[in-house]
Image (cartoon, rainbow, N blue to C red; front, side):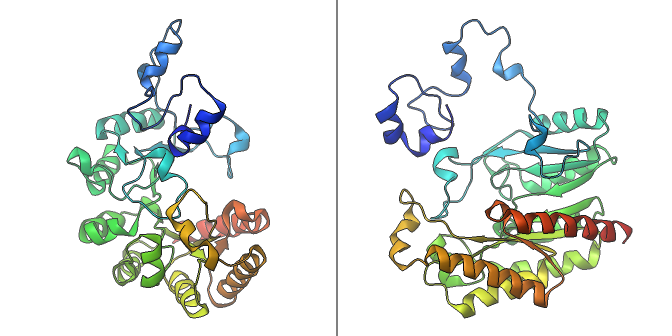
Length: 320
């Protein structure tokens, strides 16, 4: 079972001829239908509450059970040419607001202090339900005032779409972390990624958020080393991120032969070149901007340093 069945059905069929459980396809068992394979189940899957904690302590970067992760949707509304997740997870499927609020209510009874609204992408939450992310965030803030809210994986399209309403909500000091992955500010490269380039909206918006909410940490993701990327394009993206965000997750592109972006592989940088680009980009940001910069799990050493700097930054912002 799992998203691999959706992303690579032909490969799975070569090594497995039995039943499969997929996350989105209609031509295989759905997640709920897995019960048919195990008739001795005494509790229905739909009656098992959604989880807000990881199963193992080792799965946490920062082990803190006062922070909980609330998944507000599955899948994604976008189709980036490089994304390895969308083929397996499929289109966005939003959870109903009431279901999300019930999960948060349980967290409140457990003394939770931080609620992270997460998903593969969250900006267009609820569109297919006749709702929206601003409506959800308003409901989450109104539910109880005992916790802070972290906004995760919020695509810049959401800022373009809900700018004024979001700014009103983000000025609430309880919104203490906002993540908006920009990837690049080059229109040319963003077109190759099949993404919209919204830096003309994101920049002024982030400056406005800084003015009305000094406590919040602004975070973004940037991809460097995209095939044919020039030094000028790279530095423009790094400068934009350094000027508007407090934390930058800096990734080098990894191309997969199963994805549309593979057509650019003959123009791609070598592994050694990508490593140099990543190191140079981190050095560039650290030399010019007071930011927390890391390469996620691509580089454990920078992650360790980033964790230390992140704690200092949060402590400083908490005082503000």
